[in-house]
Image (tube, rainbow, N blue to C red; front, side, top):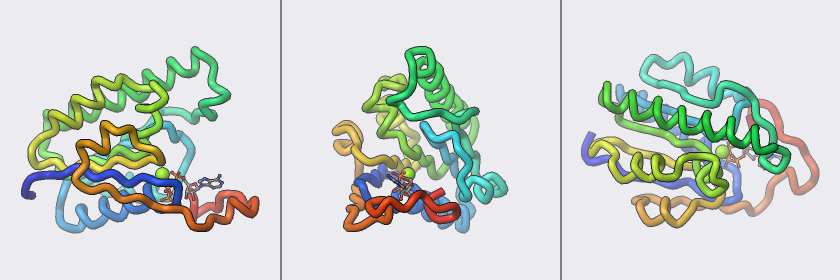
Length: 175
Ligand code: ATP
Ligand code: MG
């Protein structure tokens, strides 16, 4: 792969994570090696069942389900921060050991703005990325740090979403 770039999928509309997964599928179809790291989310989603079966994809996410930030006490915040930092360490370890073509940092924008991750480690990962590594970051409101370093910025704009009518997230569509 030629020089890797940095991509940000942001905005309040649907499609950020699924776009990142679409890119994973495209890359794997070309024999590329991928790390799919997911922050915050610990609940089961349909895509993970498929990604875990692909030998060229390493999935890294928190080992347990987490509640909403607004309901987390200090101990829980420390725990989730620890999980996030462990995810970063796992990523760095793999990057040292093998040639990875694509790294997805799904929902990374939230722990970064909410201080639930070592921000310096996140910045080091982006600023000192291997030359050929492509990085995709998703999440609603990316900090200016991500935007400053991104080569692609795609804003998923919500024009309409069923949750506005009170329709709950649907299995196989939203998760
Ligand atoms: P997707 O994973 O479908 O690509 P996304 O990554 O852009 O979407 P997220 O903000 O990560 O969106 O939300 C995960 C999923 O939850 C999305 O499919 C989105 O449509 C859905 N969702 C977001 N907010 C709500 C809400 N308030 N009520 C119900 N579903 C929601
Ligand atoms: Mg998402």
